[in-house]
Amino acid sequence: MAKYVFVTGGVTSSLGKGIVAASLAKLLQARGFKATIQKFDPYINVDPGTLNPYEHGECYVTEDGAETDLDLGHYERFLNIHTSQANNVTTGRIYQTVINKEREGAFLGKTVQVIPHITDEIKNRMLLLGKDDTYDIVISEIGGTIGDIESLPFIEAVRQLQWELPEEDVCVIHLTLVPYLRAAKELKTKPTQHSVRMMSENGVHPDIIVCRTEEPLNNDIRRKIAQFCNVKTEAVIESMDASTIYEVPLMMLREKLDVITLRKLNITGYAEPELDRWKGFLDKLKYPKSQVTIGLVGKYIELQDAYKSILESFIHAGAVNEVKVQVVNIHSEYLTPENVLEKMRGLDGILVAPGFGQRGTEGKIAAIQYARENKLPFFGICLGMQMAVIEYARNVLGLKNAHSIEMSEETAFPVINMMEEQKKIKMMGGTMRLGAYSCDIVPGTMAEKIYGKTKISERHRHRYEFNNDYLQQFADAGMIASGTNEESGLVEIIELPESKHPFFIGVQFHPELKSTVESPAPLFVSFVKAANEYHEKQVSSKTAVAAVAN
Image (cartoon, rainbow, N blue to C red; front, side, top):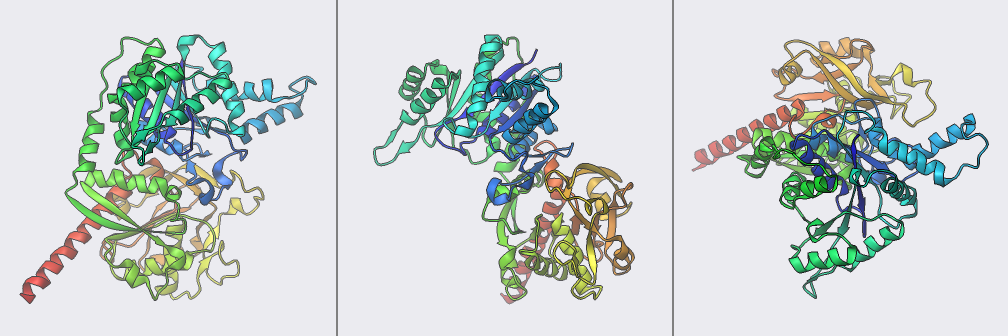
């Protein structure tokens, strides 16, 4: 039987429950345990797939095509494992399942209620991943904050499991805030006390309290929290702000979060954690040998979480190259042919980000044209790849006003078209081309050089595709379709040969979704390397000009 750890949050949102949960799982994994994490979200949407990025940040896609919460990206990046549909559950999905059962007559005429029917379904999902021998420990992160009305059924389900399962099989970790009042020069424990009291009123008693704080917790503060919150002093864990999320596992190791959790779960005889590769990654991350500046051209840049996986992929790729990647946000809606030179100044490469809809597309096209004509390293993802196709069609093939059917149904040159299987779909949620698909790479291309093989698998999330009716025209004009899906003929990768451009590549898939600390995305690694080479050439050129001037 697996053991179960539940991570809850109090006082305020955005304290980092997902990072603490992922850090604990990483430490348990490093000690030899098979651990996984799942996220329970209290919103009524069935999944985040129909949510605007401004509402919920990035929609993360798993191998099996589930549209999930962005925290699952942290889980995969920390653990280097694949998650699935089972790792993310929303209130909407719970209610949908229960209502479907009621329509089928599964409850034999009984009145369907929150307790026991909704909480029973929540418990089933909480225990699902631990029902076979795949995992030793299952960590469940409960979204929202203690006191939220929508979170109550999940907290009630945890209460019931604390009562139903053996005491040594359940551990509850509560993440809370200990604010520092600068005027008084004091850390305040009262918010934590109130949060734990509210949790206890709902029948759930935390075994460990993780305190997010800007200042170190002294022993007196720890004892005070322990006394008022009914936990052992050693179970009051300090979680200071970190310069990078990848430091948090080592911080939690110093605080013995994993050891205290294992002790509560009555697990003994575990090994010392093996974290040499993790520490090696952190050393390269903290002590880079050079720096590059990458322009992230997108329409959701006001919210960093909208491009979370992309930003994390740059961190992974930067560490491999021993380069610090400085990302500069460029709002595509305000980018024009008139100001593109000013916006591109000082950049060593641009990444044109994914997205949906008309807004900001012309700005993306302007940025891509500049990068192509000025030999600036370019990397386009999903819509970014499609915009590169449109830019090339307009300015190289001479197909004026070429566009995507998504933005212009009446365009005379639909170089980007809707996928055939998508044309009959009416329901928007969960109906895109989602999850992992294979891609065959043409030998001798930049794509093959980057991946080092001719058969790959990457994750997708799109409805529109390269229109193969124009494939030969693009090939004749020098843009190569270097990767395709064998079954559908879908163009997955487009590129310009290195003889035309040092690094110009666009992909229909999302390579950022598979990038982890231990397995950085090859495309990001190569892009950062190309940006670094471009940067070094620019520095050498400026040095040569200065020498001549002197």
